[in-house]
Amino acid sequence: MARRGRPLSKLLLFTVLDRELLDGGAELFELPDIPDLSDRSGDQVIIADTQPSPRQGYVALGILGDIKTGGPDAKAVYVSDIRLFPMPLPFDEQPTNSHGIEELNEERFSRIIADALGQGKFDENTGASNFSVSAYQFADQLGRQQNMRCSFSDVKTYNGVASMIRPLHLGGELHVSNFLFLDPEPGALFERFAWTVGPQFEIIVDTHAVSPDIADTVNRTGMLALNDSVDAWPDREALAWHREQFFARLNRVGSS
Image (cartoon, rainbow, N blue to C red; front, side, top):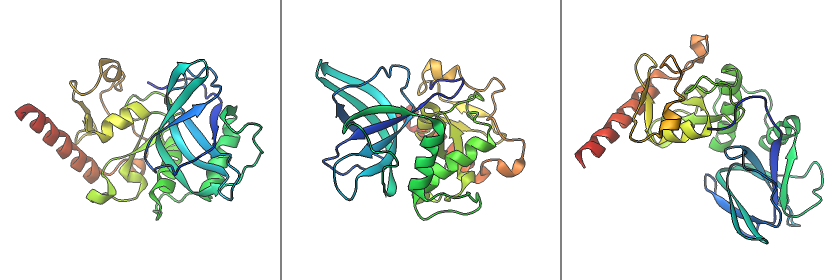
C-alpha cells in the first residue's frame, strides 16, 4: 500500500521527450541519476519536458512505479496512469538539469497542477469537457470530503486518486458522485472489479483476485468509509452497476 502518515515532499521528473506521451498510458524514462525512491512507489509525479521548443514545460501527471537498473549508467523509472495536461505549462522555475527527479513542496506541486488545469474553485455539481482535468479535480474534491482517508481502508493517505465507478462510455456520469477516493492499489483493483460495494455500502472482496496484504487493509467495519454528509456519498446506481459487473466477472471465472 502507499505510505501513510504525514505528507512528504512531492516529485518532479525532468526529461527530454522525443515522443508523444499517451494519455492514460505508461512510460519508462531513462535518467542518468535517480535518487533513492524505494519508498515512493505509488506517489504522484509531475512530468516536465525540458526539450527546447514551444511545448517545453510541465506536461503531465503520473504514478511512480519501479526503478529499472541495467548497470551503473543504465537507470530508468517507470511511470503509469499518465494524465496529460490540456496544454504544457511553462516552467515557473527554470530546471538546472535536462534529466532527473527532484523533490518539491506540496504547495508548489498543487500550484503547478492547478495552473496547468486552469483550475479555480471547483464546483462539484459541474462536469467538465475534459476527463483528465475532471479526474484531478475530483481527486482534490473527494480528498477534502474524506479528510484524505481512503474509502477502502479508512486510513489517511496523501496519494489518493479518484477511481471511476461506472465508465463514461458505459453510461457513467462525469460527476464527483461517480468516483471513489482510494489509494492507488485498491483503486486499480476496484476498476478491475476485484472488489465492489454492496447495497448498504458493505465492501465485497474477491479474495482470489486481491492479495492478502491488500485484503487485510479493508476498513475494520467492513463498510465503505464515507463522509458524514449524505450529499457527499457515491451514486448508488453507479455502485449497483459496478456490483453487477463484479458478480458477472465471478461467474465467468467460475464457469471457465
